[in-house]
Amino acid sequence: MASSQTNGQAAGQASTWSPSSWRSRPMKQQVVYEDEAAVAKASAKLQKVPPMVTPTEIWKLRRALADVAQGKAFLLQGGDCAELFDYCNDSAIDSKIKLLLQMSLVLIWGGNKPVVRIARMAGQYAKPRSSPMEKTADGREVPSFRGDILNGFPEDEREIDPERLVQAYFHSAATLNYVRAQIASGIADLHNPLDWHLGHVGDPEVQAKYKSIVESITESLRFMRTVGADTTGKLETVDLYTSHEGLLL
Image 1 (tube, helix red, strand yellow):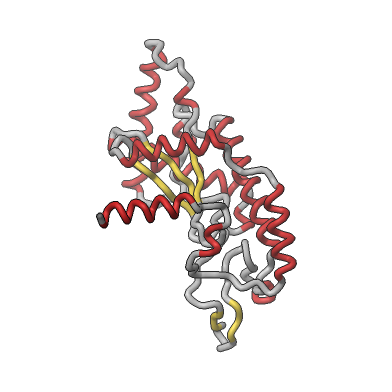
Image 2 (cartoon, rainbow, N blue to C red):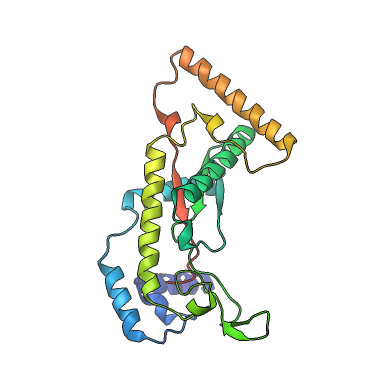
């Protein structure tokens, strides 16, 4: 009977879900906006702009995560604790893409399993804080930095600004568009793994191990090309998904 009641409660909760139903739930890290009119204006703008991901991409990720849950694939997720608007540039984005590709390459080679890559980017603009205020080095209290989506790191930008919600959307969209363009342009092409250098790693032993893996993959691909097995184009691209914590809905 208890199980039946639990299932009934879960079904009831699911049936009453809506995009705004979270507002009726207990919330931590809740932000207090001083200008409700500005919040309403930003929300109205965000309701009109196009979605950043497509249903096809969502279903593709769901199928990939199902494989992970069944032990058929490995999940690799990485990125910033608090993404900044300034990180929306080609150099920073390329570095994160290549680092995830390098890590997934090693995992695939060593674990002999597909890897689902999820970058913590294009939206990780909120920062959790235990207190709305923080102390400076000279003992003054100032509002805590809550991430670029809410306020700025400089002390004179600590006031919560609802317009940053809209700025976060456009920075996220620009980042996603660049990631899609780079993936489509062949940045993840397995035929050129030497382009994914480990310049940020100073340990010669780690460098040598990675180079050995890359050389082995290169030799395998050369053999596949020689025998005519490398003709599908699947080795020229990968799926790269993005994620961020739901700290600000």
